[in-house]
Length: 389
Ligand SMILES: *Cc1c(COP(=O)(O)O)cnc(C)c1O
Image (cartoon, rainbow, N blue to C red; front, side):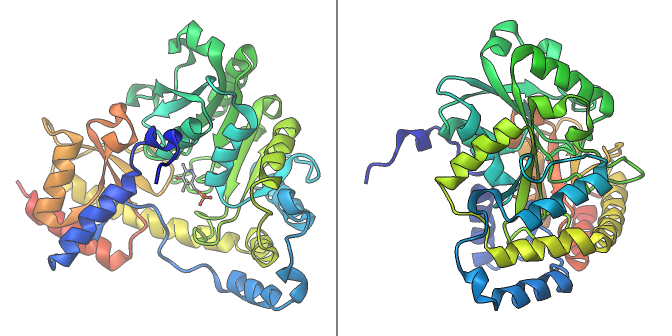
């Protein structure tokens, strides 16, 4: 069967390669521990599951979702309340908020709603691979903006050549950042608004880790920056803060024209989020802040344990303060892939090579903290033993 040319441009999904590698070793009887994937293992809080069960029994909710492409108004109102209380951002639920089947979906629809064939879309290197795939499927041309440790992994807009800026119509940004863990600042938001306005670039600020911050790092929404709503949208998600990755619920918020355009794409693609999941989402946003605090304590403890072990094997660094990943420099003289392979061969531990996120990921690996404590401890014990000097 002939398939569409657009698919041939998309590099294989990083975790597919990893999965194959893991599957083969497991088939050979090896006890493999994966620290490669960011997907909370603790269950979704009971009250959210109860709300799903209760509302799933109401036949009203078996029909097409209410308000179809925008998500039910009750959900959008709850999102507005959450943004107000968590980030001090005022949003109009009628025109500035849209329910999504996760923020990943929003990334794709952003391209469909904004980008014409041949338009350049900026993204960071290292960066989340799904942005590139969405840009390519939408006929856009991805352009990588390097982010480097010496600039706290924030892009330097002045480095982007004028001919690229001129053709750029969109930009993906993501802080707290997957994979580096870096966080944005209010000063950076201000520079971003100026840059976007000056070049007519729509910002897609992907913010699913807005709640996942450590050591007193401020929780931030791009929409809190003056002028942000004029230049873009922010995507957020219930996946990471409420242990709901499988439920597929998130939101877009911000510029009303872009929100309307993304709604139009959704109206013609899916018919919205199952009502019962939206009710469960309302329950999460309204009542489960405690889960975020509980999870952050768990991640902070695991993060401390990983850093402790890394110091013992000679890797000492000062990590950025966001996300449940650690972006770890490789030992001196060892490349990303080499270190990744060594960890797998000597300790049967799988991590993500930094280069899977772009060429500027060379010299790093990414370790995820979303593993059960006992498995993490086992992995750390093996790493310590294998790399003891
Ligand atoms: C996890 C993740 C997503 C996906 O979130 P969903 O809401 O589950 O689709 C999007 N962007 C980044 C950077 C992520 O790490």
